[in-house]
Length: 308
Image 1: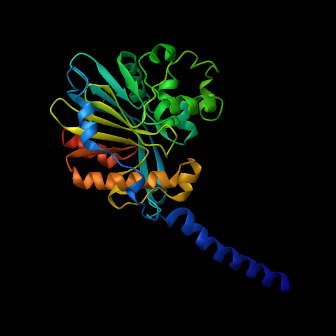
Image 2: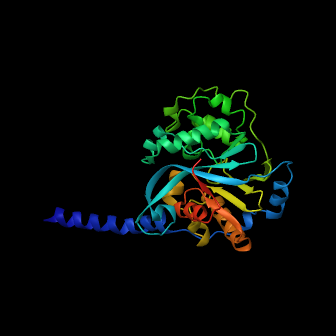
Image 3: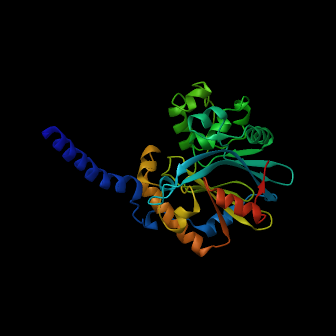
C-alpha cells in the first residue's frame, strides 16, 4: 500500500528532524566568556561596609513551594530524571530588625505553576514581611515577587520595599497577565512609588549590596550579604537555578530560556563570571535561585537557619 509507505517516509523524516531540534532545545549550551560581565568583589565588600550599623547576625530560609522539572530543563544536557526546585524566601536577622530577600509566591500562583504549596511556610513568610524594615527581590518573576504582591497590606509593605526601576517597569507591564492576573492588582499600584535606580552596585543596608545582573529578566540582580561574623553570601536569583550551572558552566536548556524570555548570552556571561568568582573566593557562599541541595548543605553547616 503506497500510502503506508509514504507514511513511513514522513515518520522517518519527523524523527530525523526531531533529533537536531531536541539537541538544540534541551542539550546544547555553549560555554560563554565572562568578558561582557564582571563583578568587582573588592568594591562590593567595600560597599557592604559603607552603611553604619550592625550587620545581620543570621540568615533564615523558608521554602514556600516546590515544583518538579526534568534535570535537563535546569542544566542543558542533563537527564530526564525529575528534580524538585524549591521556591524560597530569606530573612536577614539584625540585632533589632529584619530584612527579606525574595518573597516566593502565593497559593494561586503555585497552582498555576504546578507546584506543591506549604501554607504554613507562606503564613510565616507573610508575618516576616509584615515586620521587616526592608524587602528586596532578585527579580520580577511571580515565584520571587508574587508572595509580596499577594499581601493584603501591600501598599504598606511597598514603603519598605526597594524595587528597582526595571522591576517596576516589568511588573507594571504584566499586572494583568497570568499568573499575576489572579491577584487582581489595581493598575495604579505603583503610582507615587519611587523605585531604586542604580548603575552597577548599590548598598541598601549594613552588609547588603545589590549587584545588577540583567538577562534572566530586565530587573534581575544578585544580592551580596556579609554577616556580622564575616560570613559572606551571594544570592543569585535565577541567573543560576542550581550550583551545577556554575560548576560545569552549563546554563538552563534553551527551551527554558525561551519560555522565560531570558537573554541567553547575557546569562551565559554572568555564569562564566560566577564560575571564576567561585574558584577565586571559595568562602563566598553562593545561593542559586532553586537549589534544594545547596539549602540543605547550608542548613546542616549552620550557615542558614531553617524556618522564619
